[in-house]
Image 1 (cartoon, rainbow, N blue to C red):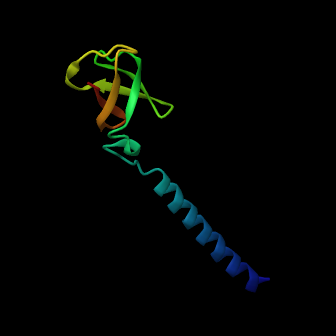
Image 2 (cartoon, rainbow, N blue to C red; image 1 turned 90 degrees about the horizontal axis):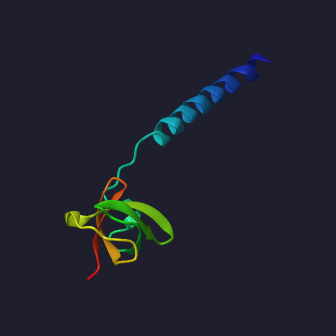
Length: 95
């Protein structure tokens, strides 16, 4: 019985260390200057950019800011993503 207890205790300790490592790695905050490679994509304005609002890109709603502080109304113009700050996209109207 003791011969079986020691290996099981060792395996349980190894599993606990592995679980702690996975938990620590999953909590690591990932930062991105260009979320999901959206730079260059074109989207439509869903909520007017004054200078912040929302745009629809590939079926997803994103918070966005118009570059240069210009206002872009809903349906006035499509916008192109030119950068990002965290998860706030920087966009400019298409000419």
